[in-house]
Length: 55
Figure 1: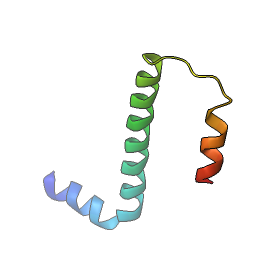
Figure 2: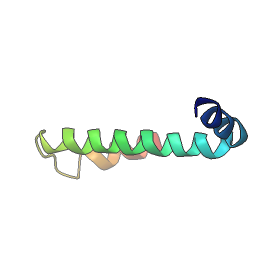
Figure 3: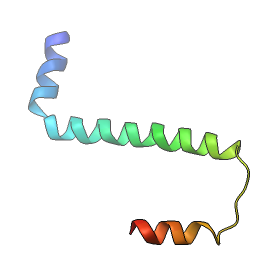
């Protein structure tokens, strides 16, 4: 079974890489949402200038 999994990963590197990247994004989003639920709310006005600086 181990060799079959390794062969699957080797033969489908791009797909496996994209799949793992999506999982990591989902985990990061879940953590960000959980953190956001426990922090104080901020109005929109101070946020938009910060976003424009990064763009």
